[in-house]
Image 1 (cartoon, rainbow over the protein chains, first blue to last red):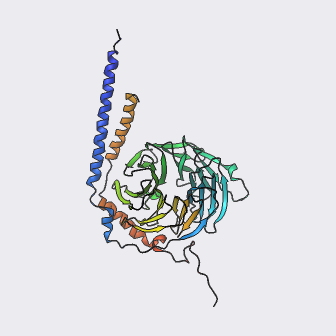
Image 2: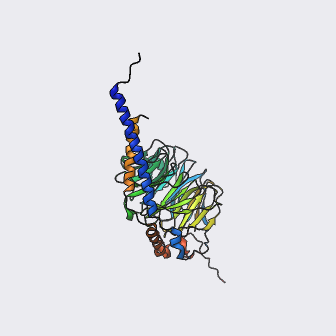
Image 3: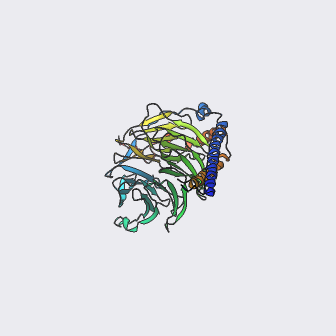
Length: 361
Length: 68
């Protein structure tokens, strides 16, 4: 005769299952409630509010500088606060610091891995951070002595269990925020390499992040392969808001200059604007003719223009308020992979799989 | 996944949703008006929007003087 399941275990299993069902039901109810609450406040569209605003005229933006030197796809770039230096990283394993005015290369570092997907300039201008397939984020102090071997002073700061997709210094050279293919973001102390806070919530690779403008406090936004954009409290590690309206991977997120909203660019060929106080998407920037993914987005200084780099080699310039495209820029001979507006808003830089960087103004 | 670990993750999800459901929100009309106001207030200081003259923008070519 088969021995029956011990009675207490059977009851326990049933109870656990009941609890699980209750939790699932509560989760569905809360999701519906969230939808309802957000919908109640959706009284108008952004472009309707902006109907009375004067339209933008013709824009003349051209490539003003081309930075040549990388041996393979450019994957990432960042501006120095001095508004003229740029750091870029490439699939060729090299990280280069350029003077964008003269196009001269000032420093070059060869990383131990290929696919250096992330790089960032320190606020002081005295160091750069980078990483990629090595799963790490390393900091290199920039020496005034051109002959000095930068690689010798390298400091390993972050360790993830999958590729590093993005990195950014916080307000000082002392802390770095990272995002990774391992699905997490993390905040690190540069000096000790210690993990200060980790951010869990994405269900797949995190591809991008952006820190809120310093006036708005300690938050940042991240975007991932789970199609979600999450806003995080840096101190508690808590996800405070989450947005899921894109139909594919989110490759780039950038805060609106006031800190009250952020834009995202996705493989679904659209850019979207999410307002944090209304807690919802308030604009979509798309056209039927645009079918290739967006790799990177950034705002002009006033937030009126949104620059977006695409996998079809172009840059589209959008009127953020009216939702219309005001310009399309050609020049790169392969995907645009990275795009940043300079700190004083006089120009923007793009990096591409065609191995070059371009400065546009 | 066992039932008890499913419960642990569901509890986290429910807790997160409760947090998100509870935040204060403003109407889109208000939020949109504020975004618009910020743009308009800062428009004059936006070089890429207004177009800087060649003499001010370090990236635009300087006009060359020629002796007649």
